[in-house]
Each structure stands twice: as structure tokens, then as C-alpha cells.
Image (tube, rainbow, N blue to C red; front, top):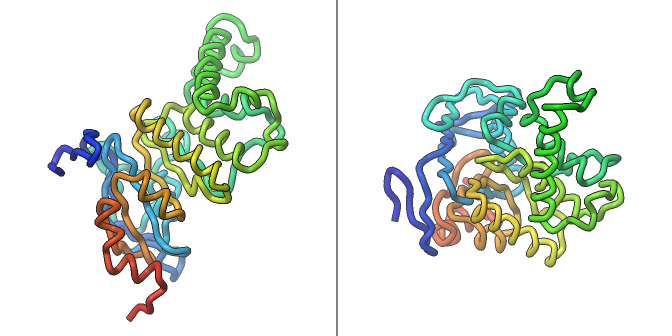
Length: 271
């Protein structure tokens, strides 16, 4: 049941008020319209999926949410107020973290060191005190390392914590990237195709971790994913895009029976 403050899911979870709202977003690249007049919201504590065929504008929308792209029309509202253009570090300090469609890890660094980079916005000591590594700087790094180690334990990658990322298989790299994002302790976590390129077992593991992050940390999650089985199993609500337009928005059951959505995925010709 939905209301102005939130709604209750089918399994009895209480979803809170609006964290972020896209209001009539239009994004252009030259003469190409990537997103056309799309509105939807993301509510506290939910798993919100953004789906659509290739080229629908999903990644562009995630880049708008993360502040990487600034739309030519419309507004992004964050926690009840319009959000002005922001720098990447400002986004992180607002409690927003993300993973990427193409893995963006430091290949020559160990798993632990990669996860520690997710703590950079939480480190307040200047470069000089960090170089000396005494007093407050030492205490700060020790505290941040403890958080990184807890996340490594949570995602069950203890056995590879000292392994250079370049030596890891693809599925584990995806998990390390999730760990780095979680190290920032986000309130809103953006996942760009977290299951892409994974086998069935790896998808099952990642799905379990996403549900655990949402349940145990209370993290709000917005994700792009092509595997419809995963989307329907994980998501509380789904927004569907096609050719830059919104063609569906609702619960998984509502979306899977939406004729416009069915047509888009079956490749039915558009008028």
C-alpha cells in the first residue's frame, strides 16, 4: 500500500519517503536526445530498478542521478530540495556511491587497498600528517581499515584481501568494486549492471549480497540490470525506459504485464 510518506512491500518491509526525485529530466548530446521528459522517484530503503533495451538511456539516467551529467531540462531533487551541479567528491559526501558498467578498479593494487580507496572522503587529516602517520592520522587510518576489513568479511572475500586485483576473475572483481562502493558508507548506492558477464552462480551470489546490503545496512539501492529474472526477484519498483522515454513504472508485477514494456522487449515496431 502506497502513501505520501512511503509504502509497504509485499513481504512487509516499510519503505520510507522520497530520497531523490527526477523531475521532467531531458538530456541531450548535440542533436541526440538521450533522455526525454522523464520523472520518477527513489524512496528510502527500497531497491529501485531502471531497465530497458540497449540504447534506452539507462546509463545516462544513472549518470544524471550520480551528478556526472547535468540535464538541459528538468531538476534533480535530493532530500527535498533541488540539487545544483555537483563535483564527484561532493556526491560522495552526500552519501551517494556507485559501481560501473565497465569495472573501474586499480588493477595493480590489492583488494584491501582498492576497498580502502572508498574511505578517502572519510579521511580528514592533511597529506603531511598522513605522511608522518602519527597521532590522529594513524588512528584515523586504523579506524578506516577496520571498516574496510568488515566489508571484506561481509562480502566473503577475506581469502583474496591481499591479492592484486589484476589476478582476479571477472566475478570477483565485480564483488571488489561493490566492496569499494560500500566502504564509502553510502545511503544511496547506484549499481550499473552489477550482474553483467557473470555466470549463474556468480549472479546468485551478487543477488544475495545486494539483498543483504539493503536489509542489514538499510541502504537504498538503484540499479540497472538486463537480467529480467534478477530484476523481478530483487526490485521493489521498476522504471522502464525505451528510446529515452519512460514507458513503465511500478512494481515488478505491474511492469511485467505492461503492454508497452512487453512490446519494447519483444521488438515490436514503434509508430
